[in-house]
Figure 1: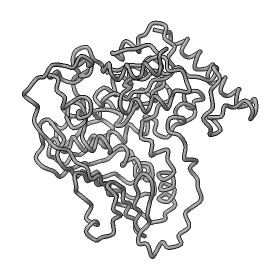
Figure 2 (figure 1 turned 90 degrees about the vertical axis):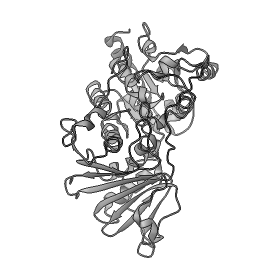
Figure 3 (figure 1 turned 180 degrees about the vertical axis):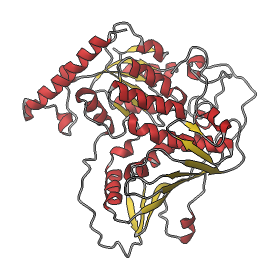
Figure 4 (figure 1 turned 90 degrees about the horizontal axis):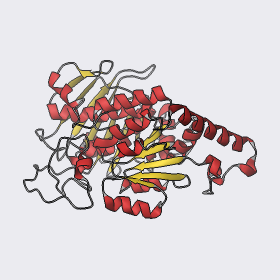
Length: 438
């Protein structure tokens, strides 16, 4: 493996090269920095590796291709082959552990877009090897992993970003400004809904052969061993506890991000859920989860409630909801604000007719990927670094822990444990299969 000293020397060279190009004047700054596509001079290009290059991973790695794509990794040969056709000079891997251990590699940064249960092992391996990391949401598969990754990012000082792009968009930034300006007054409750649900079923009994394009053992990674079935790969794994956390795990880090940011939230004190009896294998058809957060500085305690699978906040029956399939509702002392990824509405409409939004204080919108790429080169901050998205992911995943135990949980964030339900702590961290580590 390349030495830490050499990695740091390359990082310093890139930072100096980028800063020098910016100082040299407008004519020498590449167009992508100024908002255009452009081509980067070699001195400004990062060496990037993609772990998971199918589906979402394919979209993410293509956002990085102004730089050098030097390595690609996927357990599915079909995805790997497609990526190799586009990046013929990139080294190919099935096992991300071998990619990270590539002798004398010069990888600067890694994108992690594999299934959720391998996010943390891949990201932690990259961080420990001195690589900047862009990881898809949710950041991790369990609470312990989220805390561990946030700590590692802080200690290494590397550039990190979770892939919840709405954070970098215009709408989220304007909503945060509105909430912080006091436009709807003091906020003590927030409701978040997502119409889609899951369809629980039991583990299949049939054991079809593993497709020749798939390395099933590597796909399982740290998860418990089980026979291959098409109900897991390529797209249905998310609903199974061993690999994902259902609708909440899928969309929670997108939708809870907005109140987390706007209200300066971090760790909840309690979490409880309402839903059908806990399924041993899968996320339920519908779930309602509720978290309470303590007061922060001058802000009062706040309660967040999540609904999916057709469940809606009680205000829905009053006929005031926009007809959105997902969204966030802030309930303030002076009004309400509805938002989804692309727009917001203030209610009651009559009261806010002619309302003038506060001045823009948060820059943007910006490219989520470009923000991270710039941070890799200059050390500038990112909006969804792991220090922020670690607690966000913890909160989301605590909702699934509460559901699986059927208890209202009291959360001791300092000691990373549930204090009133010892059996819940078995879901905070899990034992990895032999050969896999965090």
